[in-house]
Structures are given as structure tokens and as C-alpha cells.
Length: 346
Image 1 (cartoon, rainbow, N blue to C red):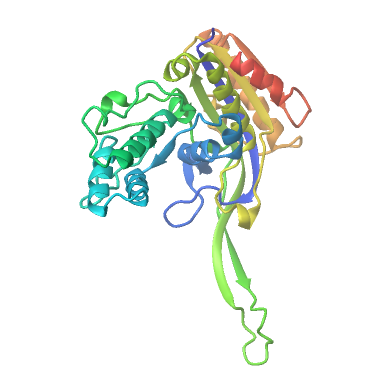
Image 2 (tube, rainbow, N blue to C red):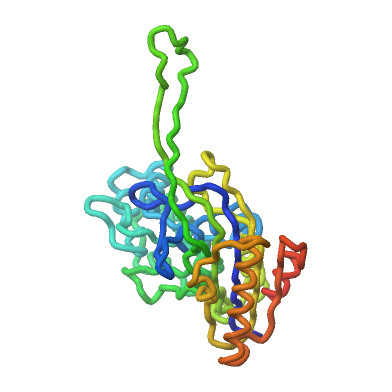
């Protein structure tokens, strides 16, 4: 089996604000001396793992990331007739197995990722406590699991500061998506009209505002350690295949959710290069260190050529950087996403 799967995607987004900074502006990065539009890996991973696609493909194999598990446990206990004080104490005892609690609270200080097996164990314990009306024992509070079937944890990892032995190393590494060309973030001044204002006394807008946006052709790189993913999922090979298939399809078809109602910036990858091999992985982002400027046959064609040339030149000096590859090119109608996914997971 080839250990590493690498995906290189080119996706064009129309005017959008997919991923905002603290001022509400589209995130950017400077590369090759010019400003590029950027979508963070965190934004991408959340869009993928919370998508309908993941939910459908990986039903019952997705975890829950939350600080509020203790609050939910307490409410379940109260709903079964347990006194408020006891419910608070028992919920805190359960929740703190997954992280340090906030002062005077049953909420966890940091986000904790619960696997389906851990959530089931919690539900069973809560039901037992409600029935017998007594506090959990020390053995019953051993709720964390080394082996589980949470694909999102297996792919993207988890860190539990309070119980580091239950940490999971991410098997998927996702780069920040960046535009292959220089960008300028633009301002959109907009107004909203009051439908009941007849314009007799006040002819002004009911609301005025400003939002910022930019458009671009993005390069996205991700690498999956298929061996580590298998280990994270208890060597459940069928589930590993489903996980890889879902991630490939999501990367190709699922857009970040930022400002979608304002811009309808849904997009699918126009070009995907998939590579498999045991060789040390490498991004091809250097292909765009010099920004694509656009030529007569178009920016996308130039970006694809830059990507292919960089790949060929790296192979020439380092030797083959992958054992096999597959391509899907939606502009030329070359290849099929299904075939590329089969290549990736087999």
C-alpha cells in the first residue's frame, strides 16, 4: 500500500468573503512579494467535517466538538428527576474527564472532541445514575477511549490537555488555500430600502453598510497519511476507505460557508491532481511563487501548466516524488471525480 495520498486542487471562486479576519475582511497572505487571498485550513476542515456530504457518507462515525457536554449531561440528569445539586456534581465529575472545567461551571474550558463511542459511554452512565440515584464510581468515570471510529478525529486529530495519552495525531495535513495570483480586496457599499417608507418625508435608505470581498483562483494542497489514518480508526480498512473518499469529495465540492447568503460563492474544483506513494510528501505551492498574471488562453490554463511543470522539474532533480498519479480536469472534461476517488482510496 502507498502510504501517502497528496491532493493538489485549483478552484476558482467569484467575488466572495469565504473566511474573514477579526475586522471582517477576507483573510490574506503575502507570498512572492504580493498579496494573495487566503482561506485558512481551519475554515476548510470545519466546512468539510460538518457538511451534509460527511454526515451522509460517515453516519455514526463522526464526533462532536464542544465545551458544553457537561451542561447537556446536567440537563439530562435534571430531566430524569435528579436534584439540581447532585446533577451539577455528577455532570462535573463526568465532564472533567475530558478537560479542565471553568470556575463554578460544568463547562469545559477548551473544546473537547468526543468520539461516538465516548458519547455512548456517557449516555449509558447517565442512564445508570438516573436509575440508581447515586454518584458515579471511579471506574465508571473511565470514559475516554484510545480506539474509536470517529473519522473526523482520525483525520484531523484531537488534543486533550487534561488527558494527553488520549490525544490523536492528525493523519490529514491541510494547507491554507491561497490564490495563485495577486489580489486586491474591494469594498462593497450597499443600502437597504424600507418597504413601508413612501419617500414623502424621508427619502433616504433604511440601512447602509459596507462589506469587503475579493475573487480568485485558489491552490489547495492536502496530504493524508493512509497508514496513520488506518491506525487511528482501529485498522478498520473499509471505514478508512470511506473516510478518504469523503474527504476527497468534500475538498472538491464543499465550499466554506462564510457570507454565502450574500455572495452565493459556491464552487467546485476545476482541476485536481492526486498522487500516491511512500516518498516524502511535498507541496507544489512553489509553482505560484511568481504570481500567475493571465495570458491569452486564460489564468486557469496557465496555473495548470505551472503546476505540471513544477511537478516534472521536481521529479527530474529528486527522482519520482510519487509512485502513481491521477488527474481530473473539469475545464477539458478529462477524468471523473469518481475514478479519482477510487484511485485515492484503493
